[in-house]
Length: 414
Length: 148
Figure 1 (cartoon, chains in turn brown, blue):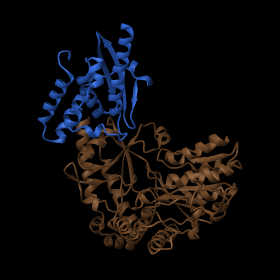
Figure 2 (spheres, helix red, strand yellow):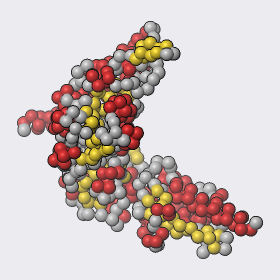
Figure 3 (spheres, chains in turn brown, orange):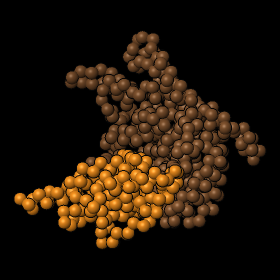
Figure 4 (cartoon, chains in turn blue, red):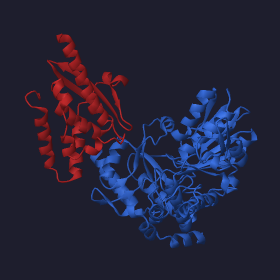
């Protein structure tokens, strides 16, 4: 208990906010309240500086050049790989593959490992709370191969029904691809248990860490996951960069994803040998600048401390939950015992889109709609929700502004 | 009812009405009021073929022609969109196909509602304007074929 209080005392949200220039702006004449962090986070000055510094001082294509700029650019690019390796505690730096983001990471696995290993009649298990990006890539492979997609159902609180999951597992299960934290509900799924059970039937597991990597401590070795994917832009970094982690024997045995420069060793018209990990999966000139700046985001997050951030966000979640529950006719969608700082809700006789427009009119940015999780919305029999998601820089005063905005909007709309 | 007023004239009326509001709250208050007053569309019309689907809200739109003019009826599940629909119907319903096809609908920008037409996929309004014009085009083709 004492330790928790100390962390709270040490957390200086005003100082944290000062690092994010976008938070200083106004929207519709009101101070911006940015609660769309599950979609993307704002960027600290350190990330913006890293981008500008790269383009101002050492922009060059990496790996092949022998001149100074190319060496500096290569060193900075590869330094991000080391930092990302530490961020998720991967065994080796070679197991960190840079992608365009979480979606590309999943598609890469689907198109390489998936097409190589999934056969007719095989089963792929996903859950009812997956983002479209962890449904459609598997749907494409299943269609092509004649495989079957099985879905883990959820309860009313938005938690996976683990008994049902166990019933779905069999020797036919080739893959379990599961979201670590739901973007629409905030639910933290028990991935370690899921992985353990999936491995018992010989299935491979992919964990979609798009929402978890910013909030939770990620240890891919302890988790024992076969694949883990996440995006830079949801961890205070630039857009257009992501990481695919894979177990070494899998990454080595999978066929390449895209062909081109960088991913080859030797090229003849009748024979091509591929490069070693991680370059085998990084064809063409990568997104160098954003990858370089991604390191600044990871360093920044580590510097503040995930424990301290999580503690702050949990306080916000609790406070917001209490405040929202006081609003007449409001229902929170997603009441899992273990959740991160995401709150989805619906309000009787109020369309989420109307709410979103009126909140924006008061400077409050939330997300409305189906959150790219239509099957989940169907499960709750709702067309969509309004979602507020909190990050390291949000405050209770901002939640008060959200509540005031909601009360005003409801008055106008009812 | 609008037969004696042109599209531009009605647009001008709306722009003048909006110039009286000095806050966004007042503008939205007015649009929401229009939305609430929009007569509901009969359930028989709320079928998939009449749906103009946006990412977040759904619009149902039907059109009829009478004496060379087009009359629209529409509804949405979101109130602000309904208010915007109400204004579009006020401007375009009862006009000729040619005038509808050529309508620039600058009033949307003038009253500050352009963001609702932007391609953010957030609502069906842009799709709805397109669909209204498509109906006009279809009636024009029908008229021309009939007169041949």
